[in-house]
Amino acid sequence: MRLMPLLRPRRLAPGQTIGLVAPSSAPNEPDRVRFAIETIESLGFRVRPGGHLGARDGYLAGADRARADDLNAMFADDSVDAIWCVRGGYGASRLLPALDYALMRRKPKALIGFSDITALHMAIQRHAGLVTFHGPVAWRAFTPYTLDALRRVLWTAETPARLAEPPPFERREGRVDWDNRVTTLVPGRARGRLLGGNLCLMSHLVGTPYLPDLRGSILFLEDVEEAYYRIDRMLTHLWLAGALDGVAGVAFGKFTNCEPSPFFLQNRPLEDILAERFRALGIPAVSGVMIGHVDDQATLPVGCLAELDADTGTLGLLEPGVD
Image (cartoon, rainbow, N blue to C red; front, side):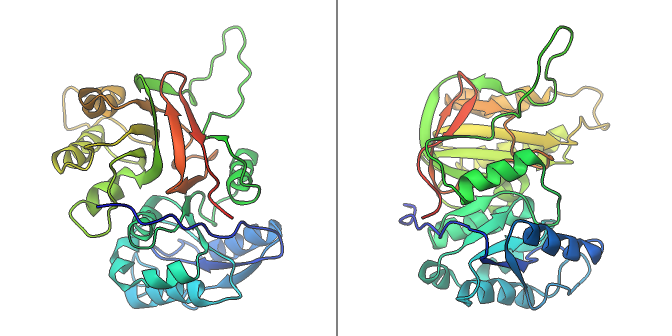
């Protein structure tokens, strides 16, 4: 299966209107929606809340049909320039059959979010060929690193450009960067289109008509609050399903609050778990890039051509994600 021809949305600029949607879970507190609106407004944009943004159905932000309608309506509305997800959580995969992918090709717009929003990124890439943006959700405060990374990809569209590299760190005697270091798991260099996101979501999409062909891609993966054996199981599932066959390179982001399981007397190091499948396949791989559930968060244009140099631990964007 070949990927669809790539379609780029318009770049962001102050004064535009951002549609705010909740395709997954509802914010835990209503104030979080107001915080998200004010955060986007602080960047110089107007905000158009989705019609069902305040809805709630248990752990979901309203009924599936309502959430899908909000997303489709934002793409259809010519006064909306881009779409930002207020949060992740769970539920985006429930919307995939109800989304209008033909509409997305007719009216391409930037879609921003991560975590559970991985389901949308992958489905849109497969069925619309539209570049979307694995980046911060709107209900979180943006650090200077996060905001700069967002602007470089969606505002100025600099290329070639480094992606997801660690923030500056002043190394001195007795002090080295423990939290943000990139590790070479499998040496080598590779080029390919950026595909990926949350490991759990990528694993769950296997066998559905919404996972794009990963052959020739630079696959990026991250996760949060998963036991090591579960990370092993999800990677093994991707491997057994043949989803990793032909992948060009792999960039692991952060595995935030992921810990060894107390159910086992002995555990395997996370680095060994991440490296195992790709070492056997001879696929260049690194871990520790700034992707995932972290304060300093990179934005990646899903579907764009990138280069991974696992020897130097760098990921470079080779083409813009916006026009």
